[in-house]
Image 1 (cartoon, rainbow, N blue to C red):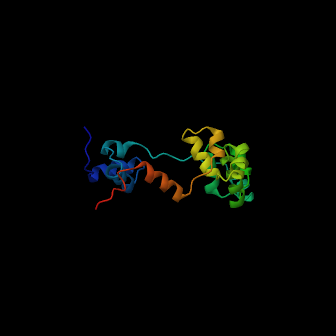
Image 2 (spheres, helix red, strand yellow):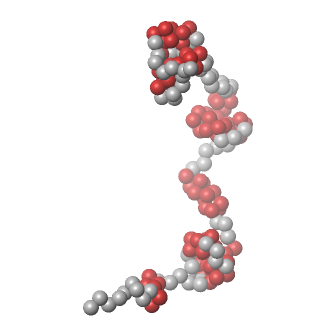
Image 3 (tube, rainbow, N blue to C red):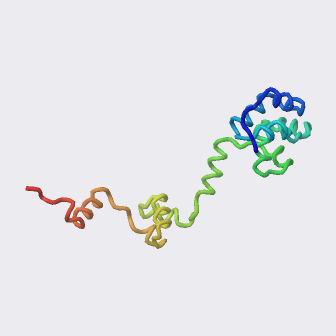
Length: 159
């Protein structure tokens, strides 16, 4: 059975295993490890990457943090160290291209006075594509008039 009180003897065992007092304390009190596991399980070592590759990345204007994040996201070592970092404008343009799901209907919707965001919302909620880009959105006053005429209980005269 695991216990959660760390004695001085436990700290000495951990130290002989190459584990500091702070790590043992954190494992037991923050991660809810049992003391036995906390004092015996070795500390994981991070993979060392070749300094030549990291220096190549730094020469290409890629920070260590960006390099390691790219690797974590599944990039190959070569691509992570050689692909330049995009500017904010490039990122914006790249995302704008990806975000246009129906590019052939974007111009048609805007010609008919339907904002592209309204067109997309209509399609997502089940509208026919042709109706979604041809039917103009109602103004707030038009929508209010329709709601008032259809809802006889909303505006009862309380005299």
